[in-house]
Image (cartoon, rainbow, N blue to C red):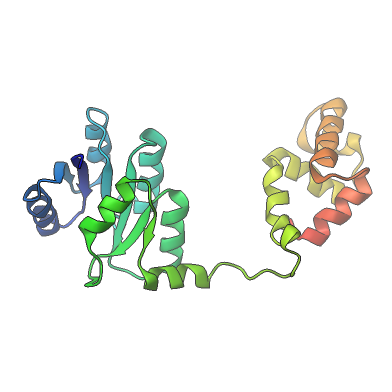
Amino acid sequence: MDLITLYVVDDYLLNRIAYKRNFNNDNNFKVLGVFSNPYDCILEMKKQEGDIVLLDIDLPDLKGVEAISKIKENFPKTKVIALSSHKDEQKILASLASGACSYILKNSKNTDLKKVINMVSKGEFWMDLEIAKMAFSIIPLPKSTNLEGMYENKKMKKRLTDRELEVLKLLIDGKTNSQIAREIIVSTNTAKAHVGNILTKLSVKDRVQAAVKAVRAGIF
């Protein structure tokens, strides 16, 4: 079995000491560094990238969720395991959406942290049943039984750039290309091009259809 290298970020000194002692006493793991904040951890990772970062997301300075994004942006191969003392639904979803491969409650007696690390290091995703239930409980229920278009509204909005969304809103307001151009301070040709892109992305033939489709989808 290959040695799994770890970084630990926790603002509580006793936790850092405990993690380091626990993992370094196991021949399957090697702690590369323990830090009270993710800034120092990221700097150290630039010298040596680790397999796993155990990240306390209840940090006072740099928010843990933001730290997950920064780590994944700079070190895409490194897996992040979020650690928290709180059963916060928003924090759970935000952590997972930012790239964490697991969300673990620090006081959980049912979680074998070493087992989770082994799973995550192999590319697997792990979540405690209680945490999974909380996360899935706030996923929006489908408004239709049509599986093909169940979440089409959200996909529709994601297809458009911020500028195209701005133009689409003006289309809904009934603005012409020249009026749109004046509103967003571009040439009429550029405004026309934005409108054309919107029609293509929304798979409609004209401006009216685009406006109707956007309103029905509740994009704004």
